[in-house]
Image (tube, rainbow, N blue to C red; front, side, top):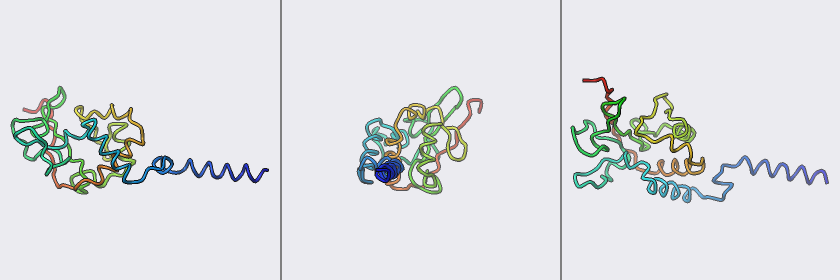
Length: 168
């Protein structure tokens, strides 16, 4: 009887050490579809896609951040946001481009950034990025969102730097 309980304990521990997606039986494609659904449903990432003059999203720049140079006026995804701390804040590139996007991040980096507001290089996410709302999202959902973001086309684009409020 003792060997049965030992075997069951080993099986249980092995099951608990599996990634959540495997434990739930989700395939990679199901995780990607779930991530796409989350990104679309909460419009979570829409700010990172610049807009055309007619107000529609420019899918040629899907999640690539604000244009550089940014126009002096227009929708925030193009021209930036203002806040008490910043004269202008620009949406960052969240495509998997390794030079200008989040292509060098790991899944753990992404989840930590969404939960703490700190990027892997120590930059604090801007106030316009609702990272504090992402604290309430499950790790499973964040892993799905990450899986989706890794599938989009890498786009080389370095958005403009933030401009502090006291800048003239």
